Image (cartoon, rainbow, N blue to C red; front, top):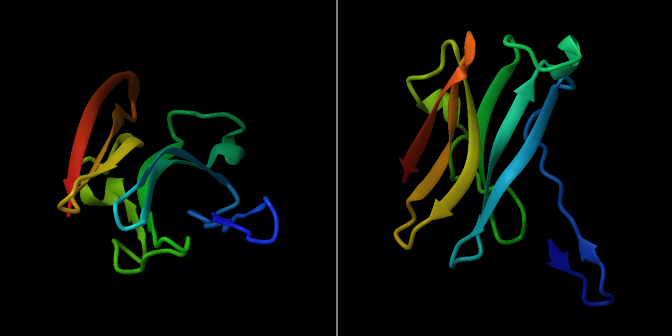
Length: 133
């Protein structure tokens, strides 16, 4: 967001995480580094509208997005500014993964935490921490 010099209003740049109309996304955490880059992490719930409610077949995946200080995607990060966390873990099949918190250290390492749920038994969940450069 940028402050408009002519008034107290804010200009908001919208970034679409997903394009599918049957997906809902949420932002769970945001981090501003020393260079003004903005990192967000959150969760996408796919096929929610098809089932009318979250079911065990609903795909859930975590993501990280990096924005430049002007609010545009940093295309040098991940896949054009976005990382789907499920794609970089060994927990792709039969699991759901949320991304709930993010931190970037002074060396530029990105840490995110969240939960991994068994697709067939929601009661079985595990916490994770991922470190990325």
